[in-house]
Length: 327
Image (tube, rainbow, N blue to C red; front, side, top):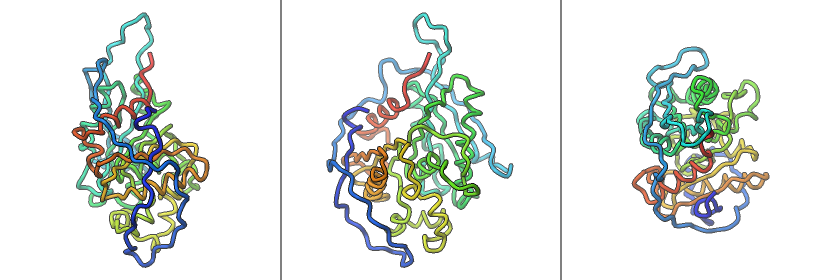
C-alpha cells in the first residue's frame, strides 16, 4: 500500500456517549492500537492516463435460500471495463480483478445500490470488474435474518458470475462496504468460522481482502452509543437477542487471516471513529493485520463522495489492493 494511506493511523482517547440501553452487557475494552496519528490526505485524480474508456454493465440476479428472491432487490450489476486487448504480443484473454461493493444506509430501504453506481463506474474505468450488490433491507422485506442471508447468497453467487464471464478474475476478490455495508462486508468475509446452522455459515466464496468504510464494526458498542439502526436490523438489543449479535458482530468474529483496511473520517458523527479503533485493536490483539485509516476532516458520507479531497486516494488504494488485469 502507498505510504499515504497504507500506514496505520489511529486517534486515541475518543469520547464516549453514555449508554442508552440499560441491558447492554459491559464489554472489555480492547488494547489500544499503536502509532497514534492523523494523516491529512492530498487530492488525487481518480483516473490515470491508461484508464479504460469503455464500461459495460450487466444486470444479474442471484438465488437466495428458500428459492423466493425479490427481483427488485436480489440483484447485482456487473461493471466490466473495455475488453480491447492491451498492446503487445500476448494473445491470452484479459481478466479483470474483481471488487464487490456493498452499499450502506443503516440496513434500511431508503438507500439502495444505485448510490454506488458512480463508484462502480469509476473503479471499472480503472480496469477492475465490479459487482454492485443490492439486498433486502428493513422496510422492504429485509431485517433479521433476510438481509444477512441475501448478502451471503450474493457472495456465494460470485463463482457462478466468474464462470459465466470469463474475463472476471475472482481469485483475489476485494469486498468494499460503506457504513452498514461495511459491517456486512466484514461479516461476509469472516463467516467461514460460523457454526453449522448459523445464518451465512458454510460459505462457498470468500474474498481475499476487505475495505470497511465508516463501518460499525462493534455492534454492541454502537448500540450503547445510541445507534438504533442496529437494533432494528437485528430485531432487538444485545440483551434481547444476544445470539444474533454474537453471530454477526464483526468484533466478535475476527479472522486474523483476512487483511482488513478500516477507513473512517475524523468528523464522522454517524459511526464514531471509536468503533473502528476498537475493532482494529481487537484484531491486532489476536495477531491480525487490520489497518485503521482516519481521513482528516472527512464525514460519514464524504469519504465515499467523488468530490471529496480523499476519494481519489481511496480509489487508488482499492485498485492497488485488487491488483492489475492479467493478460
